[in-house]
Image (cartoon, rainbow, N blue to C red; front, top):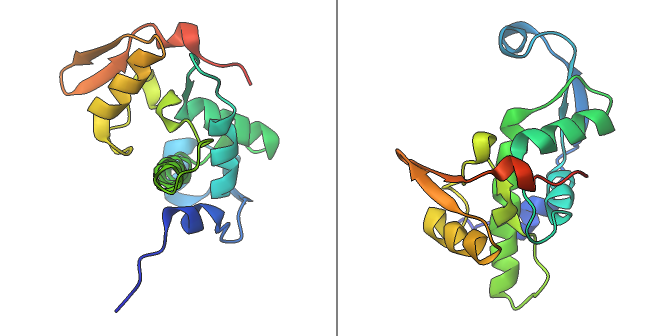
Length: 156
């Protein structure tokens, strides 16, 4: 029987990351030329932890910060999103263990201020928490968006 690895262990496993690689092949069609940083999971979590109550950050902002930090052209959109997902679930796992100070993952939005439906509790749980912090959330089609999110973006 295979044991499930905890989210907190996944977050702590840097897997030899971060690393900066040249953008080549199929990647260059989508991302252009230059370099891409593949961050370590904890780097993404550290940025997410810095977002204060009432403020927000987008995955694209996190990617830009990581690219600057590592002097790369871009931050990898795939791994950054995956690691934000891991950080969110690790935070909920820690909360379930009684820890009080957890990563405020609900403040990390997708592009255009969209709530990440794959975070713990789904859209409804995040919507409730965001509204508790003073944000207004509306539904546009299948997406839930924080109104005027741009005005609340953190500047780290």
